[in-house]
Amino acid sequence: MNILSRRSFALGTLAATTLAACGNGIGGGGAATIDARVDSTLNGMFAQYPGTQDLASRAAGMLVMPLVTEVGLGLGGSYGRGALRVGPSTVDYYSTASGSAGLQIGAQQFSHVLFFMTPESLLEFRQSPGWAAGADIEYAISDQSEMLRAETTTSLSPVIAVIFGQTGLRLGATLEGSKYTRIIP
Image (cartoon, rainbow, N blue to C red):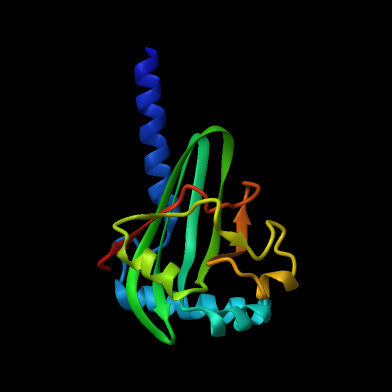
């Protein structure tokens, strides 16, 4: 088997594994399923991290990703679907995807919520054809899911991310390099 065939086989296997492991509604019940998962995720987050209720009350909007699956074996990727909430209402549905290469092995699933703390950051997100998470996001909870830091609730950052509910065999979760795209469920 030559190197190109091995690489093609590895990429094909990784893609198939990623899709099989997702379990986050591909071809599922559409908007109603996503909304139910978003409600459940928010209720769980508010119960586990009460400080997030203050963030939610001050946010212009929240992008809730109930389940993101991340798989890596040399090459890696992640995928999830969720909803953008402005107040109590869902206004749009989004998917998130990322790819990576390097020394990595394992799989994990996690939830995350992006709090858009200014109307400008929410508008920029909604108007972009594909918004990419970058280094300008402030993380409110560490990889070990410690308590919400006090300085986060008074932060002036336009976007605050809360990552929680991590399970699996990979260490750490980051949103840098993740691309968010509007979808029709």
